[in-house]
Image (cartoon, one colour):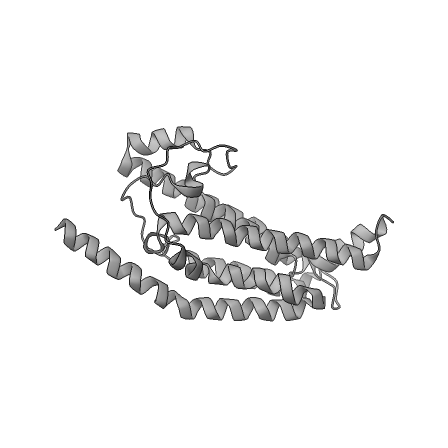
Length: 250
């Protein structure tokens, strides 16, 4: 059930992170337009005397933009080789070991890419909400990651065990650890599948210089809305392709 509902569970975690409803009773975070991680980090950096407050805001914004683009790029790279149909499947699948693209260096680029994205989003959340969101996303996806590995080990056997012994789980290897089988990436579908992350990265790069976290959050919501519309556009070709492959096998 967790794997099937993973998209909506993640949406719920992010929503709680932005709203931080426990603040209504506990008052853990301050009030005001800069009562978010971005503002708090900028103030903390400026207190050291090494930079002014505006420079500190820019430093944190650049860091968030880099995290957002890195997360989008890593997930797109992984999606291009894994296939959108597999990535969006509501059940675990074990067609074959995918050891192409980023999977030659790390076993879970999609999860790591979302962690980077979560760190970028956390800059717009109140501090307690950011801590909750980051911890909850990491723990939830670690649970999915370990469940996937157990499933793939059972279904694919020695081939997957050998792959796990060669390729790190999370921290990418500097050099490819698995051979290149010549699988062609599907970049178009991958970019569409990750359009939400690219939209958020674009918002950080453009709207961020308005220094208005509320405006950035609206950009995040618009990116999410666009991605929901495009989910059907991306999923349909993947379903047709899968049906064609199954009919060819038959």
